Structure formats: structure tokens, C-alpha cells
Amino acid sequence: MRWFSGILPGLYRSVVLIALTVLMPVIAVLVGFGGSQLAYSWTADLSAPVLVRALAVFGETLVIILWIGAALWITHLLTSRQLAQAARGVAHSWLGMRFEVAYRPVPPVTRMANGHWWDGEEYHKSEREARRRARIQARFHDAQLHWDGLWAGVAGVTVLPVAALPVLGLAGGLYLVLTSYAVIGVAAMMAGLAAAPFAWRILRPVAQRLLGSAPRSVLGKRVDELEAIRADQTQAQAAELERIERGLHDGAQARLVAMGMAIQAAQQMVDSNPDAAKKILADARSTSATALAELRSLVRGINPPVLTERGLVDAVRALALDAPLHVDVHCSVPSRPERPIESAVYFAVAELLANVAKHAHASEVRIELGYFDRMLTATVTDDGVGGAAKSTGSGLNGLERRMMAFGGRLEVDSPVGGPTRVSVEVPCVLS
Image (cartoon, rainbow, N blue to C red; front, side, top):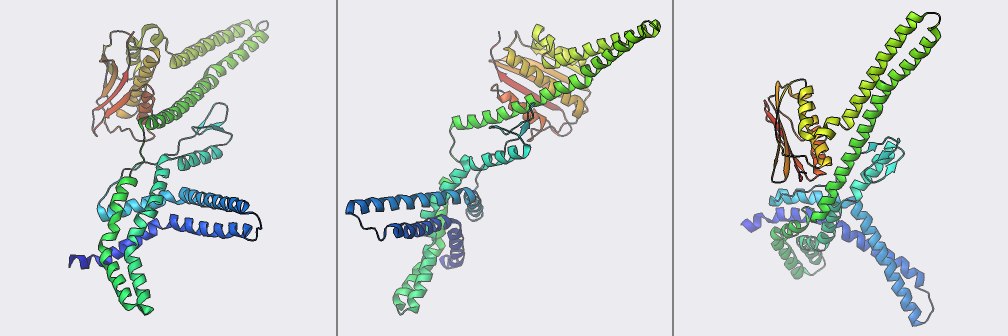
């Protein structure tokens, strides 16, 4: 009875599997047949020695193979992902199978200081072209897509023949019955019905091997991580250059221009109205002092002198003194780390402190610097509202990826309602 109740669902599932796996074989057969007919027409009337005709036939075969390969490759690029995703949905619905698959994301494009756009691979003159090329790179240079193509090809010669047995048995048996081969036809139909509850189960072993994530070597994963880090570093560099340019243009440059105009006015008035000229020069002197202070502030943002001269611990303490809220600093770092790591951790702490001041609504912050087992750790804890997360596109996500450039990591513990605890860990050797 159980077998009988599985006949109709089995037939339905066989038809679904045929629809999902028949495309590649059909394309290969159609292109192969059409190509063979066309190639044969080239040499059908050829009068030549046997060796020449053999070479011609060999050439025909190569042409047909190339045509089939090109057709399958184009079909793979356009349809493999959709077919594999549909097959995963079917396997999950029928067999309860789950697959964790990640396709290559479209990398962000960045406008560089020279006006060109960077897509993670090369430069482009327009944002539209950069985004188009980024989409192409992500779509067609994806290992998961080609793994899906392998599924489509293998399923066409494994899943398709087995899943088609019930349908072929019924259709072929019906044809034989209608053409006076009733006994053989009925036997074929019974065989098709008998296979219906089981034939579709060929999906499980093939899906287990080919519908999951593409096999990736450790080196391949590391390459992807480094490509993502490179894109982040490129964006960060472009943003920093824009910040410096904006700071010079809107701050020091404007004040220096105003100072030059004031000095010119004072020169014109020094004989006729020396008191007014003195006042203008005094204002110009004040403007020059302000411009100098802005330049020093800009330089401190690029390479803080306290970090260069006194190291990470004192630089973090200076950050705490300048913060708009109460900050406690506790340090247990016996000596200075390497300069690049020291700078990266300093700016990470500065960014975390700025995030607290801007978003956390906190009243107190605690910064802890420590070094244990060749691991430099910086932890920022606040009593704010919590809810921070390393979501894609967030500042914490970008900070984590910048730490990954040094082999480090970032951990966030921020329940809604607080407190929030963010830790940065970077492997290093102290000097």
C-alpha cells in the first residue's frame, strides 16, 4: 500500500528532476547533431585519397566537439546557478537537505583621488563602467558558479537517466500497447510504475556531493580575504585623501588666502591710515595662528606625534583626555609593538571611541590595553544603549576587515540595553 501511494508523487518528482537536468544533454545533442550535419555537408562530395578523407573526418569531429563545448559553456554561464538553486530547493523540500552556499559578492567601487574608479581589479573612467565590470567579475569568475555547472553536467548523465525511467516506462509501454505489442507494453508500464516511488531518490547521493559549497583550498579562501581587505584599504585610503584635501581646502587654504588679502590691504593703508593697517596685520597674525593650528591638527590626524614619540599607551591616554565623556584607561603593555600594528590599533581605538561618543549615549568608557601570548588586545567598554553589530557595510565590519590585514580579529558583545564591549586582537611581537 505504501508503494502504491508513492507512485503519483514519484512520477511528479521524476518529471521535476527531468526538467532540472535535461538542459545540458539536450543542448549537447542538438548542437552535436546540427554540427555533424553541417560539417558532413562540407566534405560529402569530396573526392580525395583515403588519408585526406580521414583527416577531413577528424577535422569535422574536432569542429563538432568545439561547437558542443562552446554551446555548453555559454549555457553553463547563463543557467547553471538558477538550475542548481532550484535543485537545492527541491532537495530541501523532498529530502530535508540543507546547503550553505555563498556566491561571490559584487565588490564595491571606489572613486580615487585622480578621478578614476577602482572595481577591485582595475581602473575605469566612469562609475557605470566600473560597476558593470564588477558585476561581471563577481558573476562569471565565481568558483561556486562553476561548481554549479559541474552539478548540471553530472546530473545530466546520472540523475536524468534514472529519474526518466518511470516516465519512459509509461510512455514507451503506452506506445507499444497502441502498436499491437500489448504484452510487452503492459510489462513496460508496470516496470515504470514500480520504479516511480524510488527513481527520484537518485537525487540524494548526487546532491550530497555536488550541490554544496565549492571545494576551496585554504589558500583560495585566503586570497578572497586578501582581495576583500585590499578593497577596504583602497576605500579607506581614498576617504583619507578626501578628508585631507577637504581639511586643507576648507580650513588652512581659506585662512591663508584671507591672510594674504589682509596683508595686501594693510600695505595699501600703511601710509594713509597706519592704525587701521596695524589692526589688519594683528587680525592676519591671528588668522595665521589659527591656520597653523588647523595644519597641526590635520597632521595629528594623519600621524599623531604622541604616537610616534611616546607610543601606543600614551597616545591612547591622550585620546581619553580629549574625549567628550569620562574615559578610564588601564594598560599592561610592557613595551612598544611594531609601528604598523601600533598605528592600526591606535586608530581602531580612536574609531571605537568616536562611535561611543556618537551613537552609544554612554556616560563612562573603559579602555583596556593588554599583551599576552604574543597577542596585543585593545578593549573598549561603554555603559550605553548597546545594539552594536558587525553588519555588512557598518563601521565595525570595515574595522574588522582592516584588522584582518594584520591577522587580527574583532569581537563585539553588545546586547540591547548595553553594556557594549568591543575587543580588537592583533598578533605581534613587542620591541
